[in-house]
Amino acid sequence: MTFVENAWYVAGWAREFSETPVAATILEHDIVFFRGATGAVSALEDRCPHKGMPLSRGRLFGDHIQCGYHGVTYDGQGHCVRIPGQSNLPTSAAVRSYPVVERHAIVWVWMGDPDKADQSRIFDLPQLGNPAWHGHQGDALDLAANYLNVAENLVDPAHVSFVHPTTLGNAASEDIPVEFDTSGEAIVAWRWIRQAPAVGFFQEYGNFSGDVDRWHYYFLHLPCTAVIDFGSADSARALPPERRHEGVQIYALHFMTPVDQHRTIDRWMHLRNTAVGDDQVSAKMDAMFRIAFNEDKEILEAIELAEAKPRQRRPLKLAIDRGANVYRARINKLLADQLTDKSA
Image (tube, rainbow, N blue to C red; front, side):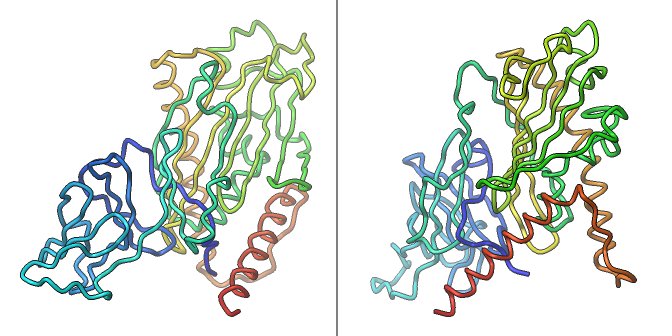
């Protein structure tokens, strides 16, 4: 299995990058990130071509990074600008650079052909930067699991009642059928739970006096960005789906960055249309999400271990797997196209 290379991946929150080199592995590529004197973030191959010393172990000088072994120095585009004691700079004294874009306090890196690095393909959401919505960046969850399983979990409303019974769901949703729409760019799975008790965050901040109608919409954007739109509204209002923004609504965003075949970093954040500007609410939501996402972590890491063992029978297929099946098919198509491009 390989990775979809011609895509933008989240390297980190903007706050993670400063004038200290940061080492990261993305799609099995070792990369050094650093914020130069101009404020722009650069991404270079984390290996000096002289002796193989990781550049992340070096030092920054303005917009340049210096190898900590013999002082060979590179600019933000990977060009060698100095070899101490030598005026000749051979063309081989260069490292690969990766296109980087910083947007909405998120740093994105393009892992494929730099000539195809189209910034219009960077994920966006209208609520990002909208003052009527409160955006809050959370953690970077380190998962010992393949990114495909992590992504599939994020287009699967059916697991919520069983994995997150005290935070994001409860037994009222167990037998509600999951609906799908696979006609667009994003794979969408959703369900509504009508006239049920409020759960988790909505119990405390929804100001509901009775039962609510609650929803979960899962949007999975290839290769591995997920948006979960969930919320609640007073059942007496009987809001139709297109008016759910009139209720208490939250978007949980998951930016999955594959490290290698068996490890994924899931950076998560949320946007909400209530308690705008209240940092105490953000802290409480972080605590709730940490519980919920660690519940996912246990499940996904157990699956990763199980998949490494010989299988005695074919996997059971269920109706709730439709979103995951379409996702795998689309990923396989991208990988096949990628292989064709490389062999052309």
